[in-house]
Image (cartoon, rainbow, N blue to C red):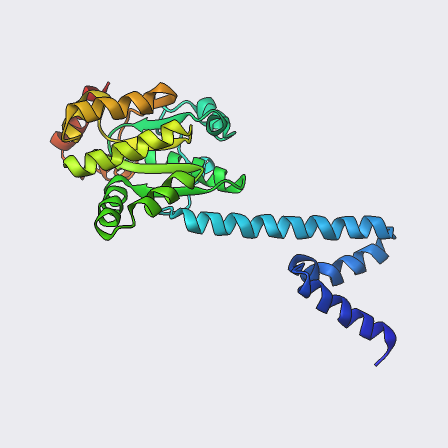
Length: 270
């Protein structure tokens, strides 16, 4: 075995020991291109390091997306702004800059089912993951249940620390199920403590603010929750038909009474 071969194998071994897996996987191709393009050593090394950074960022992004618990992968590019003209494309693009997180601003998406509230929440959450921020997504029902269970098992503070530590908390579908007094108090404590540390929340709900008193067991708690959520916030009220049902509606498979009922519900939220 020649000295060059030994050096080659030692190089790969050392790259793996140092955890430079991106360079280890691509070094052969880059060495070949450096010869073909007559690159200097510094240029070749620069390209290898850029590849290592790219792979590490991609790996970190995938880990953060997995830990976030999104129900699926959504991007703004796949959102149909033409179907939902009430959504301001420029405002959404501004939210994707994540400036709202630096300012501790909350984002609240209101509107009837199927208009894209969760889609936009997930898209912004994935952009935060791309930027290296920690995100946690949960339906309001699952989130409250986890707090109730943690309280009964004596792990409430540990659960709360996790929910406070994440850079962006997404609470989906608040209002689909009523909250009893314990659940209302626990959700208030979470929102209040995130408010105190200026940590952003994205929240989606099918209920207008005027209906929140009925969602919580106590109108005083509802008022306190709204006070903290809305102090630093952006509200996007999405009006329109359900994207999921658009094809069935066009085919006449959705009864008119259902369509009219959904529209009346939407108008009451305004």
